[in-house]
Image: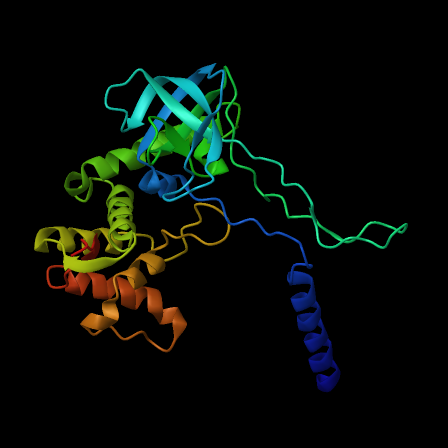
Length: 300
């Protein structure tokens, strides 16, 4: 009986692996970034309405050194609310990259009088770049173009239409996160533990994510202490389920980014004891451990 159960369990596990593995050519889209992640990576965040579309597209670099360049359709957005950036502007230009169809490429000629030769059909983009529409009301997470006087949208989730059911909640969360980042020291001393935790997590994510070649430097003793205290105020008794699946702002994720092992932290072998040990380490080392941030290295 026990042997049969073992075989049956093995078959179930094997079937699970087969079913979980995507079929060839099947695309599994990356997880959608949380609002907090989008606030961190955006230069400017606005709520507004698309009021005009340029008559002609603009040819511009898609990235630095882009020789072929791409075609951008440029929209004018009337700003109703500037959450981050904007510099007091009432209108802003936003360029959306136009997806050009990719033509099939012949590989070789076919026989005379026979069927045509083989043709290579390039794979079209899985997720086409986002495109705005006139009169659309949106929440935008945008960045300046590298050389042109307009902003660009990085991914589809950087545009949230006001018809989406979560629009108001997303706008409120974007405002909350942007405010926490705008006054980090005050946010780390906020009355609500959830705000102190989010402020600390945002700073850890910001400081511990390198952007190109970078070196590490310590933040001030006061800020380090507040960051550790803020993280300790998080929900260590259970996972933070902001959205299904992986949560980059979960307490344990934030803890590992600090690299506490360099200051003597040893993880317990019993995983059930790990969250409590992390929280205790944060409390015990607030005031001693220095948080390090990545600073872009200047070329010599």
